[in-house]
Length: 173
Image 1 (cartoon, one colour):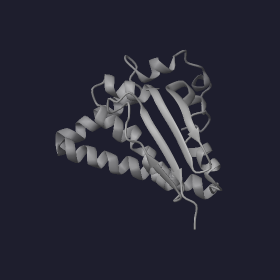
Image 2 (image 1 turned 45 degrees about the vertical axis):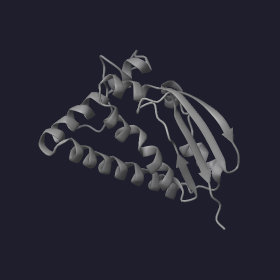
Image 3 (image 1 turned 90 degrees about the vertical axis):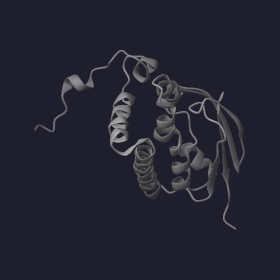
Image 4 (image 1 turned 135 degrees about the vertical axis):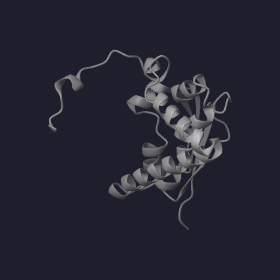
């Protein structure tokens, strides 16, 4: 097999972010749902979701630790730029968010629209969406730096009117 990337793979596809995340495209979420259903048929829903959660948590934890080891977090501002950041091109297109407060020890953000939540909710599997997307905010915060803490009492995925994030920074004594 050739290791040279095909030129056609570099072509742009004319899709909006909403088309990518929602019906009829269902990419990549439909595949996730199908695999979850197969596991669920064999092991039952609770066990299937538990296994999926364990695997996805381990994946995000390891990826975050590897990133942190290559580029150690210096302070809370540095942490925010990596893990509490919605300014990446992808996040700018899939979330509507506002920063409510940002201090040297606290970062509060409210997300009022999210294509991840819209996609999983429209497919009738918000619980799986929470495991696949939302729960990892806590995993990446914890793995991103032991001085950081996250509170998020509400999520769009769970049917609330917003995702209410607050990250706290606890300096070493």
